[in-house]
Length: 308
Picture 1 (cartoon, rainbow, N blue to C red):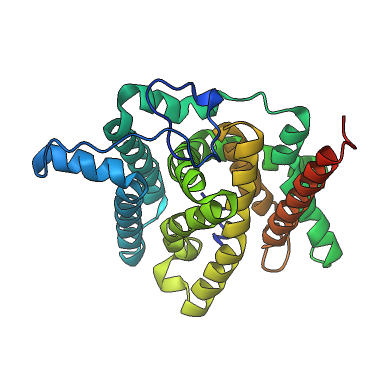
Picture 2: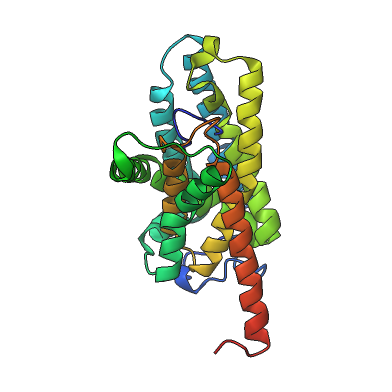
């Protein structure tokens, strides 16, 4: 989920394959053939979901979430219940779709990525600190870094609290669905870049109502909403691409992506950000490009024998 006060805001494994051994970028990874037992009723639903699991998840997830949140906003109510409901919608649909595709074993594999914490010290530093640090650097460079009245220690404590809250109550469950189900399958089918960009589309659509979160439906002008959507459109393709690179490099750690997600939100919540408070968007873009460049350099160095 995006910061509340500034919403700018593989081919799947089969039952008998160890998820840790699957190359999520391999176009020849095993698939589950759709059932041809029936063309109507439960059999037809299972066949449809098995052929199009991403659409079977994304369409109702976006429809239900956006309808509920917009309904709350238009009626002048707090959108928070809609954000809480979104987590249940995403989790329930992810489990239902995955179960229809591969049964209980596949559901266990859906959440197995949340237990993969051995991703290396460097990647932990990346997902925990890169975006907040770059956000402060961007603010300092543009002259929009304020001086905290309570001192930098207070800013650090509040940022950590926001990070932990978002991680435990939102991003873990969101990314289990958006990364574990949607992006993993899109990347297996279309590759890292295209799969990540495709995953950004439904991820963006489900967050559209949050442009009205800070000031409500009546208090938000269409100019303000369009500005929020523009910032979101600028950030999300880079966020999903960075998530995709992490997913590959960590051998499928959805936990790493969830931590990155929470770190991104926490960076946007820092009270020292002045102006529009969107410094964390260019920060995310810079971090993504830097990590992509590092991966490319590492690949070239390894190919020429410069790295041991």
